[in-house]
Image (cartoon, rainbow, N blue to C red):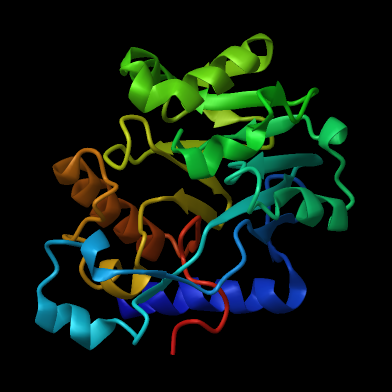
Length: 264
């Protein structure tokens, strides 16, 4: 597990200084990924988020303020396409729009958005005052994920249903294993939510919410965050994906992996 932790932290150090990480792609042009810290840090997860972690282990792995984390999304450029991976919180805390502006991306210019899952801190930035933020974007969501949220009671799924309805004319439901525009492979990582999906482009692996506290869960994937909807499936997915990343030399980027310099 130590090797993967080094890979994760190295990737964040690179993005901190250069704002992108390059790797080979299916074309002659390298793919790149830009980290967008949607909610300004520092961010920490508390012990109550991981209720089954023994006090002794928590005290050994956590810092004074808890386990370093973040609230993030990513901008992927691959095969001539610019792709937003998740859309963050939305107002009032979101830094997505100014970060996109810094990257020279206007909301109306963005044509591809891929969603790992439909929790509010991943889809909140898709709407503002109930209206579509990215009018020309094609929105891609795992079919299992979309159908699960449609079937939930409104008191649990109002935001997800609003997004699905607002983008219905631009909505694409994919199956796990499909390869999306830009040569992006979709990988099932069900458990955190019913259709939680990991995205891979060459050596880039965007793991969504596979981990909320890397300091604990990289070494001990058997411990879930309380946010994981299917605890057994989440453990299986986390164990499998981390093993896959290690065996294939992939660099992991996650929506709650810690920000640069936050892990000592």
